[in-house]
Length: 613
Image (cartoon, rainbow, N blue to C red; front, side, top):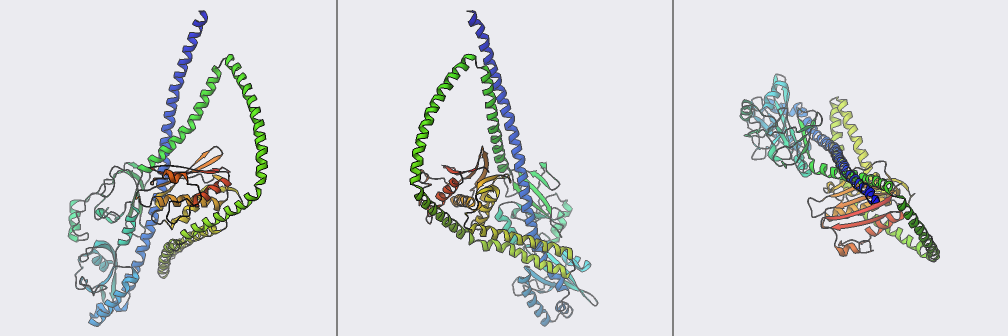
């Protein structure tokens, strides 16, 4: 009876201790999850900021290239003798010759229209002289680009055309004669092409002037509205000047919910064409050589929530083993001597069974070694066939991606041409510093072309080089680079999560790259009919293995296709050979890894396991 009474408090105390430990574990798990959530959001925000700056700087570079070439035209024409003669004499023959000359200059200068205005404000010659809406005879004395150029020698004004009703930048230069000003030359440059490219990206991009008036925008409904409220008198004066036609110049507030830097903030902008429930990263950068500012808005909610969940789960995944280890240690300390004795007996029995099993395995190993010896010749021939299949698959991929390399190279070549023309103009103006900047930009673009051709040439090699530590980021980036031209316009669907640049895996670079080209290509083809399709690539280290997960939100794989997925010549594509995944699996196995697949109606997931080097 006394023994029972002595035991009862001990059992109660043990139960109470377990309850306290469970409560403490839950509190710690919640704390770890919260920290992981906020850390993941900060990582995602840093990536979005880097992406926004890169995209915005590229847009500014293209805008500068579009501005600089038309700016040279009025300067040259203001010194042209034919222009001065036509303004002085008003001869019909000379004006007709000038009309034809301006008509020929339009296409070469990428301007929309070029015209010459007399000192009374009336246009005497124009590149559109053949059209019903010709500017000849119209009075433009009310325009600021006319009065400012007549007074200061030059002017620039963004306005809505009084005849064409199309917005554009008007660049004007005064033509001087021996007895004073003869008139001005005007070049109008429109930005329809730039706005179309901005619209294609699906991200809000617009340019405002020093007064906050939106001039150029990927969202047409925002044009000629303001980011700051304008006084009623100023709005009335702008409407009377017809600079922006009859636009009401509505105020579109762009509030700062959270300031990140001098040019960065988070905002929930109630702008036309945007999701008012989403949070946007707002980046503002000055456009060089203009009083304008470029605004770039990038949606953040989806990316930040996804990264936060991922980081939270990783933090909890690391915390749970620690918690389990602590529980095991506490449990061991509570074990009695009797339980220890029982465990010793169990251990002895297990050791006996292990010895017996070891003997069986030794005999099985000897039999297996004998069987392997008989298959050496067959295995050697099989390896040769496998190597030929790997090379054939690589050549098939090379044929698919090489067709778009010319298009990929044409883009930087076109920009190089623009920078070269600008550099020549700057040299003639003795603006050596500006010319040097243009030539430096040309050097960077040539390096980009070299990267594209080097990636294609390296992949074309036979690829049976030294097997050793290989940088994983270079493999993933190389695979994406070779597919970029084939899937132009859809590569934004491929989202490769940031990977440790020093993470190394065991393998050979070109053959590892072949695995991920096959997987990325299959995933992107599966999303062909899905406008919101996404392919997410993320990397997780699991012990001595590295798992690279390629997951898409496509239609998934049927049970019949999934069952035969790694069988040769099994394919669901009309022109496929059914060898890509088979070869990828063999390459992974050769380096001590494997490929696993899972599928549902929400998409397919391929996990590539490679040995960490």
